[in-house]
Structures are given as C-alpha cells and as structure tokens.
Image (tube, rainbow, N blue to C red; front, side, top):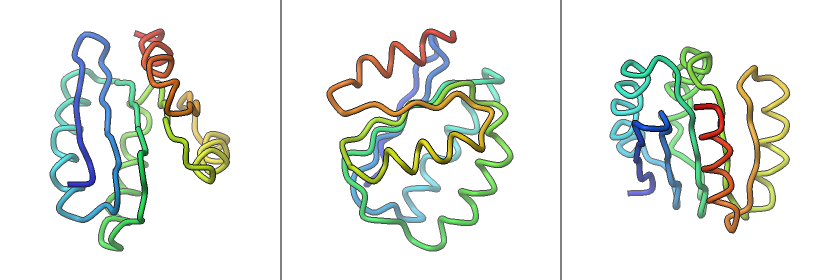
Length: 121
C-alpha cells in the first residue's frame, strides 16, 4: 500500500504518508476514514508526508479533485513534509489559491510540522 493513514483526535489532525504510486484501491481505503474524521470534528488539520512519489492512477484524479474542492473549507492547516525537490514549489503555488494555511517542511522537520498544525487546535 502506498498510502498510510493515521489520525489524532486530541489535535484533530489526520496524516497520510505517501510512498510510491497511488492506486485507486489506496485512495478508496483512506478516503472513507478521512471523511468520517471531518464529519466527527467539523474542521481538521492535515499532514501529508511524501517519502516517495511515483504518480497516481488516472482513476484517482477526478475523485481526488472533487473531494478537495468539497472539503478544503473543513481543513484549517496543511503541512506537506518531503525532501523531494519539486514538491515544494508545487505546494507553495497551490497555497496561493487556497484559504487553508499551507506550509512546506523537510523530512527532518516532521516534528516541527506536527507542532505547527497543532498550534491551531
């Protein structure tokens, strides 16, 4: 599995770790618990740790876009954690189009990313 999902009720923080190629099966496995977590808390924080990324199956693109558009208003902060060079500029560019607070961290700053998203709780 290329997506690993976890959540922390005390900080209302969901976390996904990406490793490899994201399949439709991976997406379907994590989307239901994310939806339930949002339903439970109303608004959440999100950490995405990208260890490696080999793309995604095309069948994930449209459902992912629809989910993001519908639920972005329920996400207060997003921390993207990765050492992959091209992730940072894309993350920063996306941040200009979002009302959600978005920040990029290097892999060795994972604890700092967790502290940053918790600071809104």
